[in-house]
Image (cartoon, rainbow over all chains, first blue to last red; front, side, top):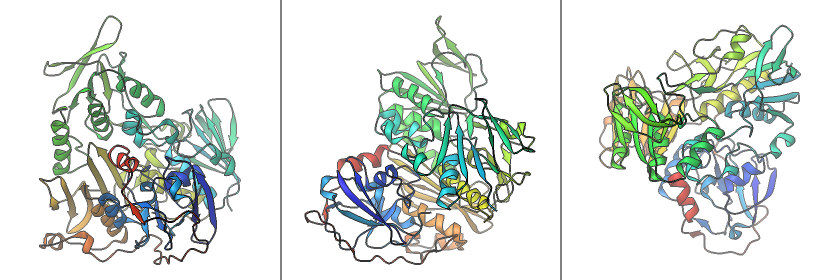
Length: 107
Length: 452
């Protein structure tokens, strides 16, 4: 289990406990955290589970593969060096304390 | 003034998203979601793919956790449907006998599979796929010993089931009446690539062939599919995927206009100002083509739901979202942005032989849609180009070195957002530090390949 923090564009913060093997996306959906759509259900098709990993993050995230990199070209909000698809971030104990920022829009 | 209560008839994706969007907009009246499928709103896409293999477990199928309905004060009534509407009194009558008052009624009644009109279609072992209960029957069958599966219809659902079943080791034949697969949905280059992959994986794909009759044994269990040309194909299981019919009964009973869907205007409203229709069942004037159509997709269900929630909350606007679809079969990721039917010119970019390409479709020199095979960046970029109305000519797309990734980023539409700033964490993470990247986990790899 890991504590994941979702920070909304208006500054509000939601902290939830997410069990492995859920992803950061599923963690939001299971806890009714707004701001992540995941229209494709987590198959890296739609780009509507976009998050910005906090710029000070030091937790070990999986490397981005080519598909995720490609899908991030289509996000509604600007892609930055901190952009990830939250469906491609499996939650592990090592991610306890992860902070992600939610974009203004997903679609 | 916002209505005192909203009844949403239909608890699929469009219905659920309508309820969620109303609450997200701050609507405080009563919201009731009525649907016949007992588990409540589900993700349908995995039902023809990962749910059948077991890669997507049952607990991942609901669109929202049970807690959503209490937290958001959305009343979910499952196992019943709206059978009639009294528009004068503003009430709906449910099959259960319950009568509900409404200020606004949203018809999100979806579709049902089109039945196969041949003798033998009601034999045991002849199935269609729409809801979780259908998928559960198929899952049990496909997780058993190898079967001879015949899929009738080479549309998205049929081909996804075929690919999934083949991956599980079954002997699969697909029979399609049209001369090619996915005729209405895709350009020949893309549908041929999909069919080639099915054949390479060992699926027999028969196009331009008609099913004439299904034969059963003395226990009324399907045993063979006979084609119009006399060929008999042995079958233990038949999955029929020949399209869907919109569920228009409540609209019809209410005296609303129906013609292959509930007829709505550009703002998704019926002729009754208090009744809307969204999702698969809604026949709306599509703004880019000027044609009336229904779209069956998650994106359409979601975006139409938001459009209607806005209207109910006093902010009506025309529905203009760019249609998006996607499918996954084997290692093929096929995505569509815009609508490509009616194109008069195409430009193909990428590597067709290598199976990574996009077909850009133009009409009168304007980009109208793009189909991509294993080129997800092209899909996302063109969806945004189409939404922003950015011009792209066929000549520009034919220039040597043309790459959609190199185009200036089109703004997000309709609500363009400024580039977000990513502040440094006010609360820094507390877990032990370690190197920034590790190899991607097997779970993420698995999801990429099978979970669509």
